[in-house]
Every structure is written in structure tokens, then in C-alpha cells.
Length: 459
Image 1 (spheres, rainbow, N blue to C red):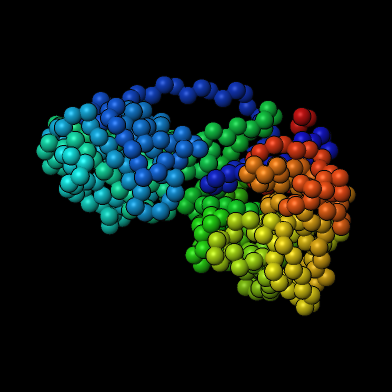
Image 2 (image 1 turned 135 degrees about the horizontal axis):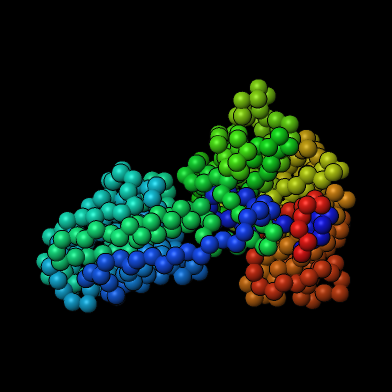
């Protein structure tokens, strides 16, 4: 959506930071076929799990299909997730091997064996493991075993329970083909950084700028004119309530190769959701607060902070997490900071000058950089993640669907004082609300910005 002079750029990455730039090389080479995992007693067995990451097709059955490029992954990162494998027939299993998803993690887990799926015996206990290892072989004594259960107890760094393959052998453990090991390693690198499956439009190439575990679970970012990239990290995602899991890191590409060479924690806070940087000052939206952090001595770490707004959210932050709360901030050429407000609104937002605002629902609030003159700019939006501001102070937003209630991903041109209709006007008084530019149907916009540069490729 854009032309040579400007456009809305939209990108979301699950883990790590991606850098998109103009493509300079030819077509990418197709991946060559890889060997299969050696056939064993678990190959083609029946598998089930406590949960499955179904939206990415990471089903339990993939853990025993012999393919090192498919995997099972739990639907969440909590300890206690399990994978159960039922062999085609009972066997005296002497060796077990697991190909875990990540190659930079110390996995903690147990493996139990059973003849009937009811009475279990622990044959492997790695619940206190501290060794980083992707491929984990184990000698076991599991006579007459037909069932095996792998229970994920956590990992360091913190990843989800996920593995490429589970193997069980009645005799000696065969060597893994080199191509299988390479496939697992490549899959680990791709999935750990969020690169797997990312496809850029023609004219662009995608490179990895920063990766886990140093930069993990990024939720917002901003760049300085001098080249530093500041990344807001929230390790507990949108629904976590545990304190002490958020921070902003400062990334520097010292040699200009497109990769961060230095990563340093600039400041710590809970739920960072929006960043603006200017000359040693970093404004951070971390609901229910907007805070200004300053690096006064230039060492890359904030040594001064000032609270500009308190209460710019509701008590759902402590009860539910940062989901549907205030999400992003942008500074316009007019010097105002524009705040994207999710549809929970705020109950008592207090600015630096004592001004108080309260309003349910979602929209845009703006405030001076010093926290004064806070005011409602527009209202009636649903859970927007960013306010995209162009050099002429045109503002654009994308809403999130209300899950079948008739409000979808609406792309809107924002006008001051306008009412956009959510949550009730759009149903009963649709002729009295400000119209949207485009309705894109069901879905969830995951961030956006207005990019103004003549180098942007033609659509």
C-alpha cells in the first residue's frame, strides 16, 4: 500500500528482529531433499499431546513421522506439556533419542514408559538438566514397553516444548545421517528467529538483525538517526502478569553488515508497548504508564527517568496482562505524541500537569513530550496497535476484528474529534460515524508505520 513517495509498511515477527531491504542478488536456491530419520519402533506410531500448536500445523504426529523438518510443538510455553507415543506393538526398548527444536537450549524433561498406558515408570529424568544439547540420546531399560510419555519441564533460555523427532530402538542406537542433523539445526535457526516461512515482496530481501536469546519476544521498536535500534521485549507476551519480565535493549550494528554486534539493556520496565527515541531520550509506553528515560552520559544505559502519564490503561493489566491495552506511540511533526488506545480504554489517566482523562473504548490520545496537555484526539476504534503518522500529519490506523460481531480489520484515515463507531454506534447508527477507507474482513492488524522514501519499490 504505497507509491514511490510513501506508504504504510506492516511487519510482524514472532521471535527475533528481521531487517528488510532492497534485494540485490538473484533467485534463492531451492532446498535440497534431506534424508529421513532411521526407521525405528516409534516411526509411524500413534501420538497425542497435552496441546498442539495447530495454527502452525505442529501436530503430535510429526514427532514420529521420520521427517526432521516437521515437528510437534505445544500450544504454550508452560511446564508440564507432554507428548505420548503409542508403539505399534510392545517391545524391549534399549535406546531413545530426541531431536529437540532448539540447538541453543538446555531442555528439562522426563521420559516415562508403560506397557498399558496406565502404570508408568520413569526411564529418563532430565528435570534438572543444565547442558545445552539439541540431540539427546539415552540408554533405557524399558522391557515390554508400548507407551512412552515425554513431559517438558522447561528450558533455558525459555522456549516452548517442541521436538522434531522421537526415536525408540530395541538394539543399538544408529548414527543420524548428517543431512538429518543439518536439517534439525537449520530448522532450529529458522524457527528460533522467526525467519521460517517469511516471504518478502519482489524487490526486497529479509535478513536476521538480532536473535534469541539476547533479543527474544520483541513487541515494539524504534530507530535513532545515528543507527541504534531500540527494541521493547516482553517475555510473557500479551497475557502474562508476572513482573520483571520486560525491558528495552539498545542494538548497534558496528560494522554495517546488517546484524547487531552489540546489545545492551537500556532500561527495565513491565509491558513495553511503544517507543520513541530522540537524542538520548526514550519515551516508553508501558501500560499503565508513559515514561521518559534518559541516557545523560552516553553509555547506552538510561540513568534518569520521569513518569509522564499514570493510569493510561485499566486494572486489567494486573489481572489479564497487556492484551487490548494501550499499544503504540508515534511522534508527529507537530511535536505531539500520539498514543494508540486499545478497546479497554482507561479509567483514570493523569498527566504530568495533573490533567485527568477517563474513557471506555478505544481510540487515540495525544500528549506533549513533557506529559502535559493530554487530550482525546479521536474515538470509536477497536484495539489498534499503532497510529501511523505521515509527514503531513495524516494519521492511519488498522483495527482488530471483534470475532464475528461485524467489526473487522478496518483501515481508517483518522480525523481529529471523529467518532468511528465501536463498540455500538456501528451497529445502530452507521450513518452517523466517520467512514472507514477499507474493510479487510476478519483478522488482526499486528502493527504498522508510514514510510516516506523515494526508494520504496513501486507496488
